[in-house]
Image 1 (cartoon, rainbow, N blue to C red):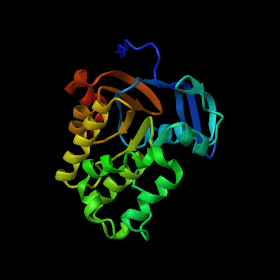
Image 2 (cartoon, helix red, strand yellow):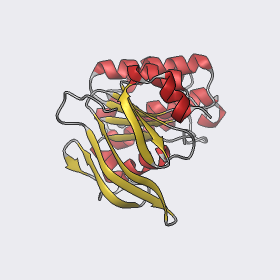
Image 3 (cartoon, one colour):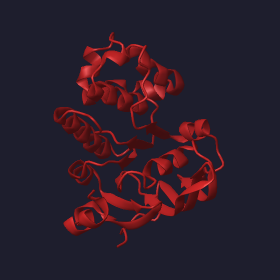
Length: 241
């Protein structure tokens, strides 16, 4: 099954990517595309290489072979900070906020990097996640898991990314905040200025939030297609535990 993509110039292209930890090959020739203004879900059981792919795209793990192209520019030899400055925003699994800084200070860290470009997004972040504006003085570490995830996504948005990478954004989060995150993804897509890569175990959320999907198994892509075509047969074969 292949993805039909009418746009000839993807925002991100990964070609034959291999990556390893401690001489153990984790990614085995991954190829995928992220079209402009789209949401792409990466699916698969635990330990199949999804997070390693995200970290490889961001330049955080050694790369053995292959290429990564972002907006027509080869980035696979660039440092992580250089990739971030080109417009890649990353929210890792576990959120990784600054627990001893206030919500406002966490947001200011991003603004100190992006300047006026990020400042123009601040009101949008408050509109997407109103609780952040209500809790500006609270330390990040005392927020609930869902509130911390909203803060992590908001902080990433303030870097003014063109590609937002979300690793397990619904993990351990109450349903009401999952709904807010899904609404935020749809709102951002409608804005038409960025694409999103979404790694997600909650399949209903992934299917509702994304346009296309890639299924991983043992470090390789085994199926891909439009999210509407994600059938119960595919879920049973590759995704159920």
